[in-house]
Amino acid sequence: MAGFRFSQKGSVCCLESTALAESDFLVHAFCTRREGVSGEGFSSLNFTTRTGDDPERVKANWGLLSDAFQIPPGRFLVVNQVHGDCILTIDSPDFEIPLPGSVPAEADLSCDAVLTNQPGLAIGVKTADCAPIFLVDRVRRVAGVVHAGWRGTALNIAGKAVGRLGERFSSRPEDILAVIGPAIGPCCYEVDDAVFRSLPSPSDEASFFRPSGRAGRRMLDLPAANRWHLEKMGVPPGNVSSAEICTSCREDLFYSHRRDGGRTGRHLNFLMLKP
Image (cartoon, rainbow, N blue to C red; front, side, top):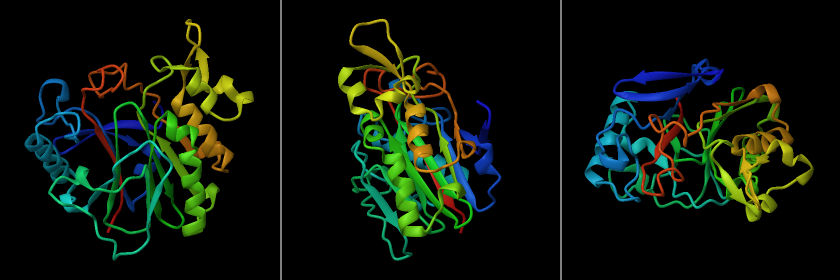
């Protein structure tokens, strides 16, 4: 876990990238499941109502996060993730967050990545095994968050987000820091042939897959696959870091859709350019 550290922000326990923490214009966190108010399988810092948690408890968890980072609830933007490659770009202060209630998780925007150069807007993705990826251009002060499960990885959403940063904000790959947060690891992520065939560049398959021991099955290294996409887009290897913490293994710290059979919570992973 070199390059990462656990931190306590108010009542919220989170994981930080030491490289991003050195950027004085940025706030970021990969939240753990600890220190919230949800119970049972959602214990305890759960940020979604979609898997059956009490809406009032989820609302209270958002309040704990808001207090810990001194960010108003209405300044969090969390999209409706659909395991695709749609990227939302916010480059105007006139953007209005489509927030019907006081829980940012209800924002009705279907995409899996958000990029912005607007300060004071906390952009986030929710995960429980999929890879959360932060992209930061330190020169132009642009930030991005990416949600990458196997489908998004197969669609190269991380690489496309790097390309979009160049198109919309003139970001250069060599100026981008890419940080891959906690995700299910190759120790626990067994996939079938359909997933294997969906990922590109079979000549590089050794860097993505390990033997499973079962016919027609392989163990997928999801962070490694996304690292490969980022580096193919020109992000220097030294600019890409990965937490290398398996969400399925660490039940004490993280939710896992696969481990918990789908009835589990979601972490919030967010970035904000300071006002």
